[in-house]
Each structure stands twice: as C-alpha cells, then as structure tokens.
Length: 556
Image (cartoon, rainbow, N blue to C red):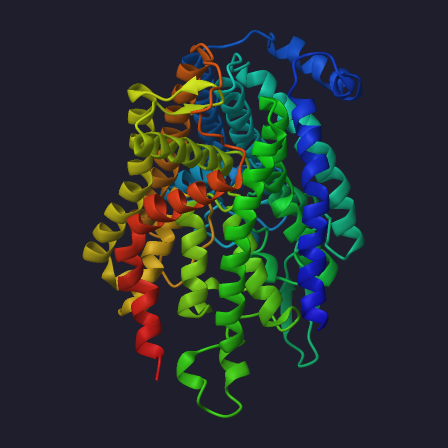
C-alpha cells in the first residue's frame, strides 16, 4: 500500500505542476513585454550587451545554423578540457586527462543531452571537469533543444521563429537556473553532498582502508534531472546513496525529470492559441505513459518467468539488480520515467530488468513521444501530430491542414526523412556492432542483442542510459555512439526547423466544415494510432529478436 501511495503522490505532483509550469513557459518566451522581463531582465541585459545578441528574428536557416555551430564549438571546448584536466585546477584526486576517443564521446554525449557515460563518474573526471565542463553542458544542451522546440511552435503557428541566442539565454535564466538552484538546496538538505574536498579516506571495522568519493553533487544532481541530462556524478548514477540518499530525493528526481516535458503541451496550447489541442496532446501522451508504466510494473513485480512456478522465488527474481531502499515498484517506475522523459538517470541497473521491463524502456526511447526529452521529445510529438493530420487528410481526399496551414509535399518529404533517420541510426550500427564486436558483448544470446540495440537506441534518442553489459570503453563504441548521438540530435532538429520555416511563410486558410479538428478525442485516437503504427512497427522485428525472444525462452 505504501508503494502505491508513493507512485500516486509522484504522478499527482507532476500533474498539478504541469499546467502552471506550461503557462509560465509560454510567458517566458513571449517577446512582448511581460512580468518575466521584470524578473529576469536585469540578468539578461548584461549578457546581451556583452555578447552582442540582438532580439532580431532569424530565418529557419539562420536559427538552425546558430544552433548547430554554437553547439559544435562547445563540444570542441569541452573536449579540450577533458583532454587536459590533469593540468587544470580543482583536481585534488590527481585524475589524468581523458583518452582521446572517450573525451570525444563524452563531449558529444553531454552536448547532445544524451549523457552516455563510457567512464566511471567519480574516477573519470576532476572536479573542474564536472563543474566547468559537465554542468556547463547540462545547462546549454537542454536549453538549446528547448529553444528549438519554442521556435518550432512559433513557426507552425505562423509566427517568426525568433532568435536562437535570445531563446537560449531565456531557457537558462528563466527556466533552468532558478529551478535548479532551489532544488539543489533541497537535495543538499536531503543528504546529498556538496563539497570541494578530496576523496575521503576511512578505516573500516575490519581495519582496511576505504576511499569514499564525494564532491559538488547537489548542484550537479538538480540540473541533471531538470534538464533531462541523466549523467551521474558517480558511476552507478542514482543508485548511489550519495546521489539518491532516500525516498524524498528519489521522488524529487522523478518529478524534475517530468516537470518540463509534461508542461510543454500546455505551453504549446497557450502559444498557438488553442489550449484544448495542448490538453489533447497531453492526455494522449499520458495514456501511453500509464499503459507502459503498468506493463513495466506488472513485469517487474512478477520477476523472472522461469521462477514463477518455484515457491518463494518470485520476489527474489524481481529484485535482481534493484535497490533494496526503493524496492521493485519504485525502481520500475523510475526506469519508465527516465526513458519516457529521455533523461537516462538510473536508480536500478536496466541490464537486470525482466525482458518485458527492458522492452518498455526500449519502446519509450524508440517512440520518443511518451513526453520525451526537454524540447526534442515534444518536437517528435508535433511531428507525429503532423503525420496524423496528413494521413487523415489522405483518407478523406482533402489537403490536410494543421493550425490553419496546409501540409503539402515539401513538409511531408522533410518529415519522412526525419522518420527514417532514427531507425537508420539505431539498426545499422547495431548490425555492424553485432557483426564486428561480439567479443565485447557479455551475453551472446537474445539478451546480448538487446544490449547492443539498447546502446544505439539510447544514443540516437539522446537518452544515455544503458544495459551496461557491454565492454563499451573502446574506440569502436566511443566513436560509433558519438557519431550516432551527434547525427541523432542535429539532423532531425534541423529538418523540423525547416518544416517550421516553411509553415510560417504560408497564409492561413479559413476553417470550414471539412477541416479535421485537432483538438478532439478523435484526433487523440488517430495520433496515438499513428505513433504505434508508424513508430512502433518500425522497430518490431528487432524487438522480436531481442527482449521478446528472451521472454519466450524464459517462460516455462
């Protein structure tokens, strides 16, 4: 009963915060004078003056160029920090510079909001790298994607896309920084360490020497979860008692992961002038989330199917790889939340999930529409909404319209390319890795295929969690996943910005009796059906060969 209450309270808090947060976001990115300008203008004005930023609307090409080039420059700067961290300050443990391919992978990983870690957090990076490089990217990476989704919403509603640098600054000053500051204090109050002292050395009861890693974890943790970053200060991420000490910190982490992603539909509804449509998208995603959450909870509560017939073994099977502090249900809920929000933080090892539990995490990342990550996920949601409208128009023989703009060949070709990018980036590298790197896969059977599939799915979807059964700290995995993360991030966003730019230039057409309304229950059903048919079936053969086949082999 206590577990049920915990789950209910977590979801209720998220639900209560979603709408007011969404309305605040819409106000924060309104270029017309409003209250948020009075609150944050004194911080932003000096930034604009020093950097030469002017509030001038950009074309979609200018917006996309600013987005990609600024992010690429940040990757290069942070790469240099990782390589030379051994010679930089704030390194009391004397950690040496990163190996080149690991530094390449890590810099791209954190700039693309993926946070895939092929190093152990506490032993791979100095305090300087954690605070100056990693935390810097944990703000700028989600802020960049957030700016892109705001520009997309403006574009499809017929407004200018805005200015990338203004939106980037506002994402940090008005959304990420104030919330991260407050929640960092809450995490520290809950017992998360915040110190610049070196690794503690203690003598155990047996008389042996133990080194205990610590550091500025509280400030790291708040933006890790709020920005849907997910990278851990410690190697075991939020399963570490310093990074997730108790039930309160566990609840706060899940709320932060879902806070912005669940509020974006309400921000969208406000910005396009159709609040009901925003609610329809929210409810559609919430239904998918609840169904997947229920399936995961059922699977993990049952445990290993092969043990269900053995008296007294059911609970033991389901507890494999899970934190005893949180138990089966909250560990399962966390795995769904972190993959649905594309965060990638873990409080349990996903490699030890049941086959169906692992399937749910994969499905969340492959669909990337079950709320999705900060900005990029909602871009996918709106992409599927456009597809749903287009397919509905084809069925009735009418040119499809969305927010009063006709969807024509140009937009649908760009969207079709977006649909092909993710499957290509996931399935092709998976096949290559299985063919060439079988010796780095710890499980040769169906689970081994799932491990590799998960690695590239996590990379392409910018999630960052892993099954962790791979020997992935090698040049092959570092370079291949680095390339997948970079392309998975920027190709689709640039394509969708092009769609927004095209729609923003079109004249609105009047609503008639034949217009397919996108703020009804019928559209919600069409939208969910489109996600399942177009999105899920793309990956179904790979899932059959991986987690589904594994589940069937375990069934007595």
